[in-house]
Image 1 (cartoon, rainbow, N blue to C red):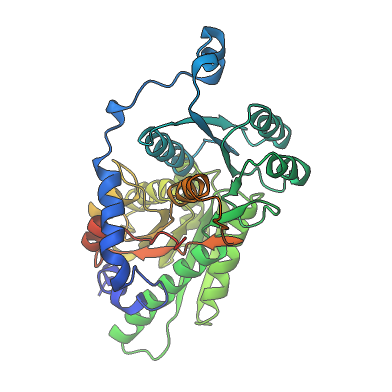
Image 2 (cartoon, rainbow, N blue to C red):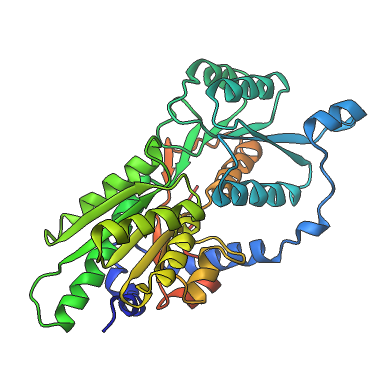
Length: 364
């Protein structure tokens, strides 16, 4: 059996470690995802950029509650999906409006944007913080002005609450996938223990998120001492650079069994390289994100271009639910954090995930 085809069988084996929505949550979860599918972006009212709105004098007469989204950057498909989803979801809420800002990875820019949101008396602030940035005094200022601050990063302290998907858990899920695939391959070949050679392609070397994903991946691989990472390289999140890094791996390592890419965009470059070097049939390729849309993770999986992806919850829908509950219920006190786990998606559970979703909303 070729290793890549074992992904067809993995969903059942991994279902315990990556809990899908439970029976009680299925109907609610299905309704949630059905609502998301029914949203038509074209039906939304045009929202001019903040600078243009100020120039035209539109802000003066707009008394809707403003939900501000501060993003570290919007250079990846995942961040753009978060922004687009939140734009649509806030647009569906009567009496609310949405503004987003991109800090381009600069802490000082995001600090200025956070300060401006406080001065504008935003109804709520959702923040995907620049890594390692210090915003404690500004967050305290926002909270003292009765502006809830929802963080999408587990490391940002002092917020109203945090909604996040732990990158370490993403790495562990991918590692479990790799170990189970190689265990099944070993059984088919009559061997007692799994063994194999793994390539890991990160987003970047200096990203804390990528480092934590890699740490979780390495930790999961310890369950099978015969499974070794033989090549680990950054790609800057680019499919083109992923192609180049795979070429390096082929040249240096000659043979390997699995490639774990830190995003489905990176995985797309791996697929191109694997086809170019005629190694695709003997290679299992896994990515991260599971976004909808052409050439995104779910499409790549359904078309057979990749073999698995680790579903990464978008988080912003859960964050908005908390914001809306805070605004409707003065007595509501959110928990300190709401971690939402990742979920391994393979051809075996793809149809179920497509119809039901792969994550459950936190119970508020």
